[in-house]
Length: 170
Image (cartoon, rainbow, N blue to C red; front, side, top):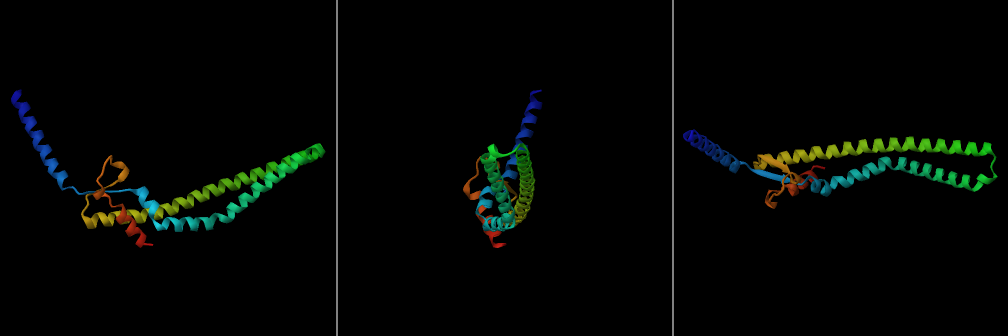
């Protein structure tokens, strides 16, 4: 039994030593995706593009909101002088305006979210291509997200290289 334990221990030690040399040959890098996205010049261009695309709808929503507020104020001010029929008409008008506002706001948020996601995915594709290119050209075997590693030396961080390469690919 004692001999079997020694053989098993020796086998384990040899396997661990073999794995240690494999790890020693592995070249690793890290990339801080938050930093990359924050510092890319394309981020501002996308923000401007989306703002221009959604600005008219945003103004329309703001106008509907102010119209609704004006209607509520007028209703409160004139309520004492209104007949029950006028009160009912104003309440229906306000409810209709509120429903229109809610529908347009939901459509706006859905469309805006979809477009932001589309644009973010375009940038992410460029970032991923840059990471692949840098990893291949520098012989990295593994590139980790910076937040996935509890610690990584700054010399392993390729975020600046990624930012530079993606910035050139406008």
